[in-house]
Length: 630
Image (cartoon, rainbow, N blue to C red; front, side, top):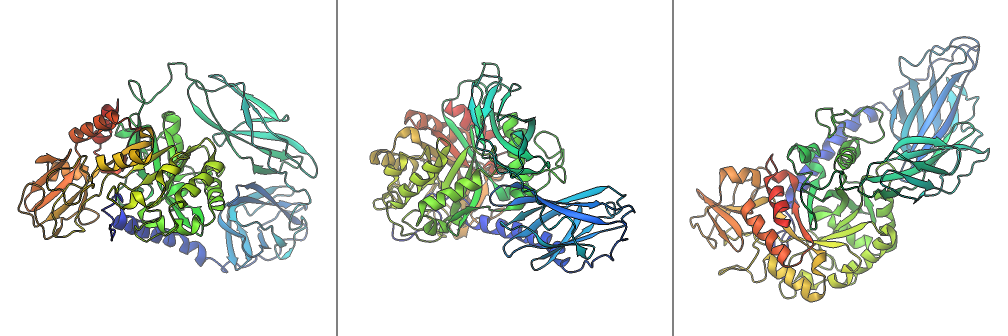
């Protein structure tokens, strides 16, 4: 093709909705940030407390996860008289800052930071102490500490440096109920006292040795372990990198629904769906979809500055869920280290251990960052691994999905990195992620000289676990006057507007290039594309523009269309509908089952869909995929 639209290459249903939802999310976050920023410089130092109170302060860096850290200040009344209030001040070097704090009111003026006691934490009896904590970014440590206007007796940093991170644990002697862990010792200037053993982020034991055997495990379940050293002053150092283990099943544990599971059934969960769509991880449970899927692609992380970065941090790991909204019926607390979608996914995996979760990066809106990132594949891969394996959520993710739209071709922007860029990128990713899952969403443009010919998809396939072939969005109302055509035809049909713009052609071309069928997943859209001003019922009619949609003109969720514009016919293995002057194409449970049978006959690894929130409340499309793949 000489030109590229969001549709003609399988670029899933999201160009404009993505941008709008992200703007809305970011606007909300900016609004949340204003009160904190507005506090800067408003706090005035409290008058010096009574000399006899003699307070002191000390600082510890309690955790460090690479992209950020947790710090703690402790204020102690070392005198003989009560302390009525305190104000602590310190300086951070440029590039180090507080991002959130608890148990004190923290403000700043540039690199000068001030913490004032909460109303309930200002009065300290002789010998009493109080602590407050904060999350921060940057490598620096405090200097110039002042407490109530005087130099901190404890100094800006305690003389006892926290211990280093222990080595990554190794697992051995694995049974269905236990595993032995061993790790390389941490170091400390005054000695290591013991180690906290963390299972899925929660402490399960404190030991003095560098080994521990956990004997309270469930069969057929995934676990993630890390360790953290504690020194003689009870300071904790950084958490080690995690090790993941899966206990053998005993044939009676939970599994992926009834019957054998050989094919992948993967769904995309959109980060921004928690806003306007009001779709949350718990909906996977209430719809019955969780027991019918095998994998989730959490979308999307951003690609910018040559690195993988967070998309929307509030939705990802900060949004608080009530008990009624939560997967396990337990409400988030204000001080827990992880909330948001990530914590809900953690709870989902605990309830449904068969589900694997991948973090998907890029997408239509954020694919432009790949061009710079692949200039240094090793550095890019390391940044992605460091983010996905961040100790705060390493147990949530089982790998990474790379949604580059499109290597050496055009999408929202054009890339000219060359045919080898995709292979070079995934080689570096595989080196970083080892045996974890590494997958990609790829174009379905099988036209001669089209996008599938622009990059070395066959060469890269040896390093990917599978490809999500985006076999949808072939046609749509970006061609305002038509002709009307199904956006996700399985096969060609008489009158198709462009040759090889159908699923069978894309799969056949990838196979011909040497990509194993088992590494190909067939794509299903849980939405329809449509036109208005149409008089012809059959495909090929003229139109006046895109039909009205809930979030974007020309696109609508299946859960809406099944009631407002029921299917009136099928063509090319998918459904279409004519209602009034509107014409829509979309997949139904019946056409999905046909496609799943075809996928099995082709020896494909399974199927995937974009995305969960387009399905009905009872998850009927997911159920159709599940039954069709068995």
